[in-house]
Length: 420
Ligand code: MN
Ligand code: MN
Image (cartoon, rainbow, N blue to C red; front, top):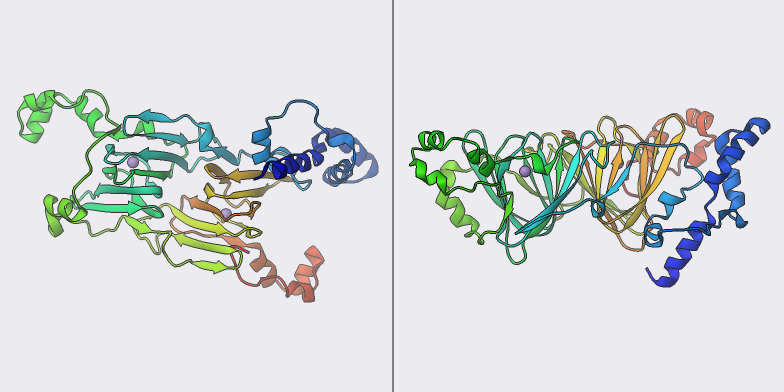
């Protein structure tokens, strides 16, 4: 954004301010005039756009404001309060170790998201995220570079695979796994867990378990001499540097080849798959248990919204939605009864949350593609389209509810377009 247009957007933003300042007066006037409070608020906000009411001579955090104009001064259709629907990875501390870093957006900072937590992690080339497991399923999307993953099934068969930007993996709860950054510059990825209070700091680490088991027990279990275990690390490894692995073929052969190979596939090429749906406004790629059977509890959509395009008005019948914004700028309004609607702005590295069944849209407010992941703790990705519903009810019914006649109704798209 140029300085000039940034200034203009701050000014535009300021000129729409004031609606909060008017609301108490609006309530009194509304009671007197017999108007609803929200109608009065809307009228007041629109009036204030043209006078001095919206000026803000005090302090402003201008860079933050420039990125979040709708969050600060919502459209007049907003009302009431909603659970938190926004957070950003750029507000949570990084745990930096030799070999990479990690940080997380969990219920601790986004308390409304009870079903999903997210982790963002970087591993330099050769570095490991230590062999470990945990009580939640782990769904991952590669944001940058290349990585090698391993996961063992309880029957002892092993999956080893390489992933690149736009690929994903799933590790079922309790299955032991590892991640390693590959060349030339390692990897960065997003992890999604189907537990809102999940913390990447609370996983079961191989090194920690070994450190808390008597050496004579480890010796008895492995058949090795107890002295071997005096050389194992006394502190957790978590993220640590390593050498680049051999080729995938050599690693697979070394552990026993086809006989020990997993029958299940744990990686998926999401970004390079054919769009599930595409149109002038953008495209969507949906991945769930129907096209990726190993992912039984987490479904997702990779959504691209072109400038001027919009993720249509919709909701998800049973599952809450946890979003990660990959690129571009957008705004989302979430409605929730009684009489609550909240609009927030979203930029790359931000997280969005939508309660189950709460209707919403996402609009591209920038001049580049808006790209985001919609994830949900669910076997199948499922959404209900407002347009489709309006077109499926008899025209008399639609006229009675919204005063839209049949001629007009026929212009509404009859099919779910996802992005319009
Ligand atoms: Mn893990
Ligand atoms: Mn949605």
